[in-house]
Amino acid sequence: MNGPGGADVALHAATLRYGRHLIWEDLDLEVAPGERLAVLGPNGAGKTTLLKVLLGLIPLSAGTVTIDGRPPAHGSEQAGYLAQQRMFDPDLPIRGRDLVQLGVDGHRLGLPRAHCPQAEAAIEAVGAGSYASAPVGRLSGGQQQRLRIAQALAGGPRLLLCDEPLLSLDPASQQSVTALFDDYCRAHGTTLVLVTHEITPIAGIIDRVLYVARGRWAAGSPDTVMDTETLSALYGSHIDVIRVHDRIVVVGEGGGPHHPPGGSHQGHGHDRGQGRGDLDGGGHPGHPAQGGHR
Amino acid sequence: MGFGFLLAQPFAQHALLAAALVAVAAGLISPFVVTRGMAFAVHGTAELAFTGAAAGLLVANNAIVGALVGSLVVAALIATLGASPRERDSAIGSILAFGMGIGILLLGFYHGFATAATNILFGNIFGVSGSQLLVLLALGLIVVIVMAIWYRPLLFASIDPDTAEARGVPTRRLGLLFLLVLALTVTGAAQVVGTLLVLSLAITPGAAAQRLSASPLVVAGLSILFAIIAADGGLLMSFEITTVKASVFITSISFALYLLARAAGPALRGRRRYGGPELAADDAPETFVPGPAAVQPRPAAPGQRGAHGHGQPPR
Image 1 (cartoon, each protein chain N blue to C red):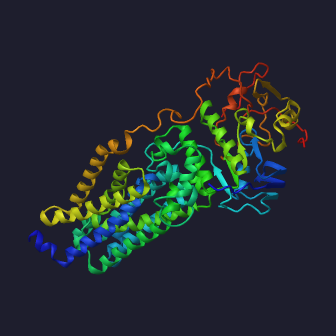
Image 2 (image 1 turned 90 degrees about the horizontal axis):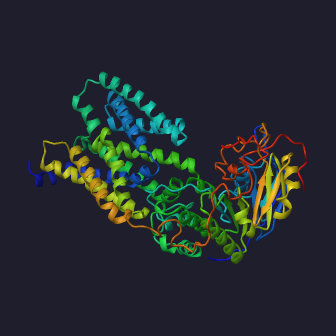
Image 3 (image 1 turned 135 degrees about the horizontal axis):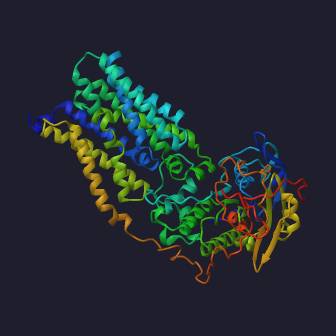
């Protein structure tokens, strides 16, 4: 794998609407080359949508977005994308190494190559060599995720965009996958933008947090954003941010009868994940009305 | 008429060549049909090729051109009405039922040879004229060329559509292109095995091949091989036993290959365990002991929001 360095990302007064629905507005954000940004927020807040804007799949309603000074081009090779995980069908006739290879040349015309050195290097980099020849659907969730990460890395991206990369993994796999991101981005200087429901597993490798909720946003270091005052201002209601050992717990986002702008249906299906975080607020004393499980 | 005598006849050699070309096309698209879950689309297109063929017979006394037009129209309809995979099957079912009704009506108006109708349904490659054989050759070549050009992006879009789209693969346009290629293949295969039995060349070889390997190239090769064995093998057997239609042998060979592949498959690709349970082969730390979910504090209740607020975003 070569070390292509990191891309810089800049959003200025970026606003996104679907019809009358406001997803987020006036987003100003600059991500320096090699920086790691976590994007947090409730379902439907437009986290996945932000990744799709950076991929050039969705245009902004207003404002500008640039990657290395240029508007994101659809299908650009400088961005690696790790879509939200869905398990592959056990009978899908494709091996791990074919999947990774598609990340290198799947968008080009022609027949698949029998051997692809870039794919092999990416498989080695994520430590998936021992099972890369297996049908990908027969592998465990953690193994599949490693191969998908290899696929995203195989093109040598300068910017790595990950959507809930830990969602379906057990805690042990979460740890090892997080370490993988950390090592790879450090070695190659890659810029990382990572959408997640839970900050705790990735808190150690993240430089900055962007929190989007109800059309508004806050950005800064994890300590300044994941803070009672900041999140309360963002949601417009009282939010408790509690630190238990090395875990960060956000309590009190639920309970209201309203579906504010930025409500659950605004993501238009882009946020498909059932955040496990959803369940955590439930049952907390003092917040009796815990609806909102979807 | 002996086997050797038949084999020496130009019409038999043309039939074998046409069947082989149709088999290459069908074998090539077959794994994609299976991966994309489009078996019912094949069936629907084939049934409607029957309607087209009946119309072709009635209007121009040319079943193959009618079948071609019919299957292309259906491919376009499926693409328009069944955009989402879930919608697709019910859309196909609706189109299919109506189209078959029209086909029966058209056949009722046709007063030519009664065998023409059976030939559409069950195939009769020996009844195909020289010029129609050329049409078959052209169809086969178009399918092979289109597939050779778009194979890789089509594979990407079939396996992993979200990532493919992010990488710039035009997944929707490729879906339409595949439907058109499917229509051409179905038309060709219908001449060999008939519209009712197209599935034996367009689905079975791919399904069998996928039992034996997980490598896309190997699967494509095996699928084409199985289709050729079934199509030409069936024709050759019908030379020997002339009282039975070739379609019977073709479908039987195809199914036998499928059964063999299912029996042999587990030994070749299914039974091996890869890495064992959850990252056992990985460097996953063993020390992490997750507590019960209720005790584990996790951040955020992201699905839940409080009441409306009017604060400014903190900057």
